[in-house]
Image (cartoon, rainbow, N blue to C red; front, side):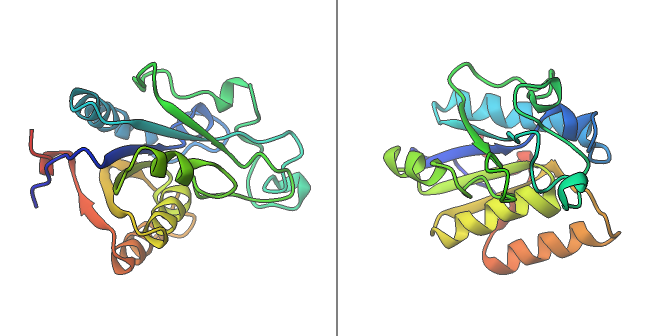
Length: 193
């Protein structure tokens, strides 16, 4: 499938942060997506399209952490090294950063959950979203499903995403769920240069 970029398109990179790449909640082979993420960034920049980056931005007592009843190790605490974007990710200076998971009592996997992402996209008259990052089976999936519920045409960037795979088939099941909901799976080679 070949896809041309239009004036209604935006890139959303999900949670490509130190803790998910090499830290306390590292996604297997997460660093393999960086070169692809950078290719998408460069492509969208060249086409003067906005780049969004979501990040987990948790308070120290976040309810998703094991010690507070959640299922995850402590990760992405606000302003710590673990919460910073991965060093090799070449985000533009004008990247629109969306912080999520800031409410200690609420888990927020989606970039839309408790944020102004939808408002920002509407203000820019965006109709199509290109979404990839970490992790396919959690925050990427949740962001894509929300995007579809808001009626954005949504592309899943397969080569710029990796899964946690707590269970071995989580990634496959997540991709199938996204596609069934209407997402379109593409790789970088599908973009028309």
